[in-house]
Length: 423
Image (cartoon, rainbow, N blue to C red):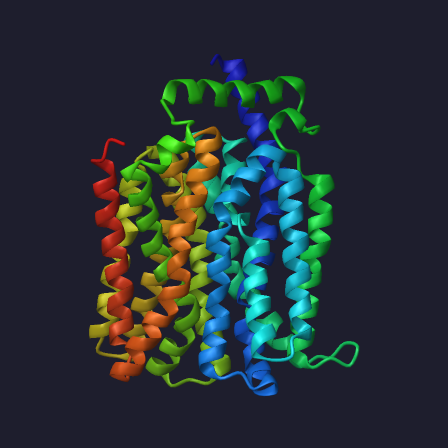
């Protein structure tokens, strides 16, 4: 590519990032908020509906069952019908189900609502990862996926105070937990409608780009695809040991991620003995740092191109952080070690997604990315229960910290194994 072409590509990608990334991050923010707001609603809902801890845990986690089962077909449909229609459909249906959870009446309807929410949202995250491969060359995907995934830590920073504030409100005579579900679900419906009119399927449909800029993106991606040897056949990918190794890598990452999301407040409170309000602020702090670090780490990874190295470093440092949290001589050093581990978990995720997206294209990318995400999200169900079981058995969080550190070490080992696996 000559200097003029490179300039047009850079201008096109800059325009694309301004137009798409904040919008996609907002969609993911809403998705993550609607997924985990049940943990805040439970402060009132469980008592109102007579939900036992077992039923609540079952319902909260069963979301991942239907989510995992329908991810692959959902992503294949997105690849066939286009991102604009399918992402809009996902958002509208999950928003309606989330808002409708305000009207559940007991254990059966609670579990049914969570199953439906998983079904409605299935395919959203892997669909967005696939969608980004339609726009961005491999060498910039680290910072792009990192920017998109800022929504995860920011959802904790922003979502927690919003959700707890809604518990003290009432609309249409509804209770606080019902108001929470209703008011946090309806924005997803609205944004789904906006998505249908706002989101272009491919660069060729982007009216904000000039004709030469559209050509710069499509030709760059076409040249990359032809020269990379990426696999297009879904059947061949599904039989690839490397695909399943990467799926188990993501399993380890998600185990640590959801373990932290569900248990960090309790872990910090156990170490500090502070009030719930202070624990909330302490829990939000590492997420703010992680949001900045994710973007910087992704950009640095893009400049060097050493994806595995940039994945392995936070795995090893994060594991060390969780180990130190067990051995820390004081609450301050223990919490600081948890912060370090938390930030490192967030650094792993966007770098990880540069690996499968560099291997796959076409239908293979649509199905393969969904398979990896499905395998990973199984631990979204198992991880929190595992940490809870360890805490209940031992009476402390030592086992939980060891589990988090071990998951990062296993992720690092599996990435190295995947590197040496040819297919």
